Length: 125
Figure 1: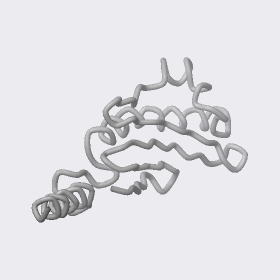
Figure 2: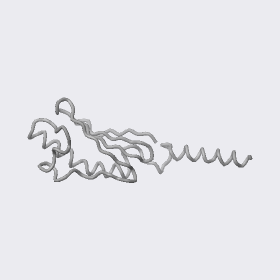
Figure 3: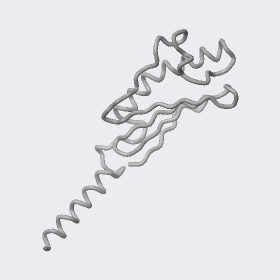
Figure 4: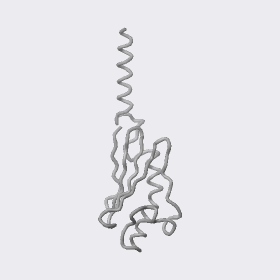
């Protein structure tokens, strides 16, 4: 019986450590494979949004309006391992926007791009 209590205690300690920010194998929000791919692929979307606004006077209501004139196609930021998702919203009658991707690594993380602030990432391990 004592060995079961010891084993349960050790398993709990390992689980808590694995899911904590103190684990050197865990990536901080905005770092790692999923976010690196998203940053790289979304840089061209940000450039296309600025071109669109420069020509039309406001940001588009949806990212699909960037194709094909400003982008041949929307970039793929998907990553099955990290369940990456993309969201876009035009705000303040097209004068502002937010571009957000969320992913799991290992907790839920979210990175939001807004002009002129740039990227801001938060997450829970």
